[in-house]
Image (cartoon, rainbow, N blue to C red; front, side, top):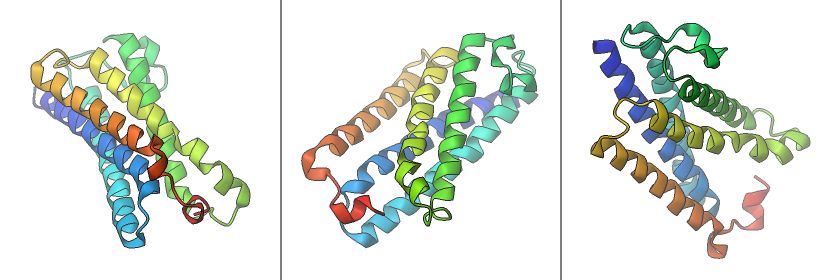
Length: 183
């Protein structure tokens, strides 16, 4: 049962960490002072890496625990899961999207010399937003605590935070200056 508690806790904190990373990623282009931008980017990346470590913890703990019937093959073929197969598909797609966004984000600095990569990196990095949304869906579909008031509160708080950051990002006053777009 200890693994099940670890899996649940890691899943919830993963969602919070990726929410923090998403919010910071959305508000960063509107920050004009380089030193603030540096620290926001540092926390954005740190939250994403922490989220990835917790995501790995969540997956390993769920697979290792005997409370539900989930085998390692669910990572490759989530349709065959014995526990809420559709929710596992959504979770696996979230995992793939978040890992892709992390890899693209990590490669950005190394591939900045490539004009093609620089032009398209944001389009690829948006996979993080898709992964975040899928992770919310996974939590609502698969989580054993999904209907408890505290979990609904956390989920709604995450949704509200990202919606607020999205509204800020769409605000014309928060648009990045031309010099920030090229970086």
